[in-house]
Image (cartoon, rainbow, N blue to C red; front, side, top):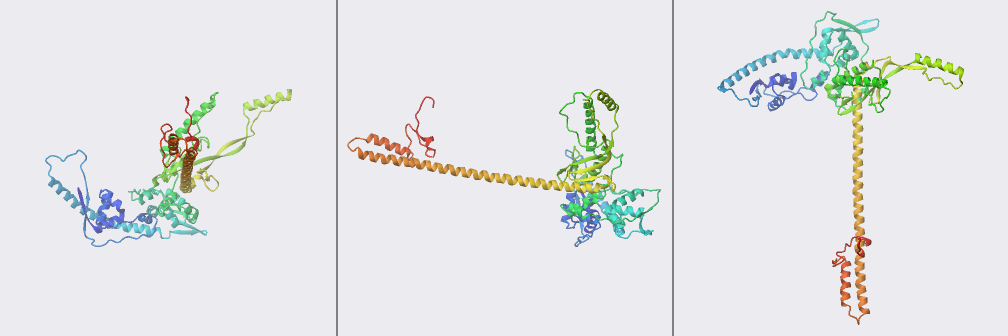
Amino acid sequence: MTVIRLTRKQLYDEIWEISAAGTAKKYDIPYSQFLKQIKEANIPIPPSGYWTKISFGKPVEKTALKKPFDKVVSLVKEVSLPKGEKPEPGSDPNKKLSDQQEKVRQLSVSSTVVQEQQVPDETHKVDVVAELFQEPETIKQWGQTYNVYDRETLYKEVWAAPVTEVAKKYKVSDVAIHKVCKSLEIPTPSQGYWAKLRAGKPVAKTPLPQSTKTAKKIGAQTGYTPPSETNQNVLEFLGDEDRAVVMAVASQILLPDENERMHSKIIAHRKVIAEWKKQENRNANDKWRPRNTPAPPFLANTISNTSIPRACRIIDALIKAMEPLGCKLTDNLEFAVNGETVCVSFSESQDKINHIPTKEENRQLLEYEEKRRKYSYASRPQISKYDYQYNGRLCLKINNQKSFRDCKAYQLEDRLGDMMLELYAAAEGLRQQRLAREEAERKRQEDARREEERRKRYNTEVDRTLALANIADDYDTACKIRRYISAYKVAHLDEDISEWQEWANAKADWYDPTISREDELLGKRDHAKAKDEKTPKHSGYWW
């Protein structure tokens, strides 16, 4: 068991400086154990969204620490021996305890020193954020305003806030900031940096390397274009923090270098395409082409071979930016966003050019001309007048709805951020459609259940009503028999009908549902059945 002693004020300052997760990692204490002990010490921690607001330069409220400030808090890290491991024989527990106490004392002293060293860092961070919202250095020439980009200043700014926020200061687009950073050899946060920072995970800051190039650069102010209302509305289904993170990541998507290794799913799919094309070439040379050929894989027959690497790089850039946010790429290069599968498709424009006849086509034309001079029924060979050739201009469709295409104003690679936002919007649209289908199916099943229940109740009521009528018919028959017995008895006073009367009364009791007497030969009568089902019938050999 390891014990670390710090004052409440020291812990409070560290938690609000590097986050609770960062402090727990600093002292090598499991996060759950650390939070439990901080809660017992009544030390407030930053609420959800605190670090995201700071990264975007938004105002935040810091919960004050209540007294006593100097009360010592003992942070305990429970350390258990590995399973099956036993203490060394002859070891002195008291000696180990004293060694641990000495380590705790040294750690307490060192933590105080670390705390003192972190104070300038906090001041430095505040200075950087303050610089971010100061007016940049500018010069004016020929009626145009130009920004003066300082290498060290810009390096601090892009690591203190997302590039989109830095672009606002310089009144340019985020793409322009990325280009300036590249020309000045300034490293920028990698994809997923701000998402990890928001989640309290450790992040690495790339130091500013030495450069032989100039430390300053001049660039024109093109005017900052804030995110359009359309984009804001596209992501309105997300929470404020999630929307801010997605917008920040979308604004910083860059196309990976040509030599950079692509996503494993893309590499595997390109192998599938290559194998399919080999099989197609074999089938084309085969006289007996199989009928049931497999469907072509994604990208195999919709764009030219030279455009496939470009399409794969676009997909690679999107998934590498979105994967830290929980998105995935399927084997068919479909995007799994927020639990929904969004498909993308590529197509390539074609130029219409005059067809140049081949040697075989020229031979067919010569044969046609010769036959036409001899015979009137010669038919001209069917030769295309035009050919259609891929020109490299791609079009990307998301979920077969929203499309992006190469044009004079921009290339697909310039719209990566918009594509990412549209993938999220398409996923939300699919989710709404799925929920609507599920709700419609639920209503259909509920209506069917109610209809089935009503049908069963109706049929039960019909059966009961018919049974009641059948029972009443039996009762009428029994009453008729008894009246007949009385009338027959009056008409035959001089005869002995006692035996017949007994038999007739027994049959009346057999018909009577209130008595339901069982007959020796006819058995027990089922009064509820229909008349033709319960009428006594002669017995034969076959029934």
